[in-house]
Amino acid sequence: MANRTLWAQRLVALFLLGCLLFSYPLLALFDSRGEVFGIPLLFAYLFAAWALLIVLMIWVVEGSRR
Image (tube, rainbow, N blue to C red; front, side, top):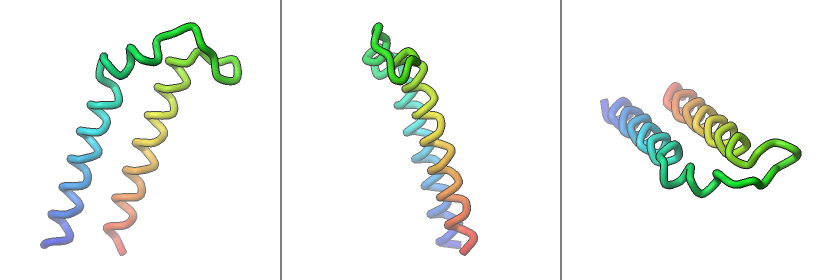
């Protein structure tokens, strides 16, 4: 039971992290003319944040099965 509660708390924390990463003030920091490997900085940030959330979610879900 405690393991399931910890799993749920971690998923809620990931949701809140996602809300923070995709909030306007943080997105506005990356809305510039800069580029990373030819990709606009905002798009690179969005993809990296999205990928980070997916990796963390896999880590939480797979870690709870052990």
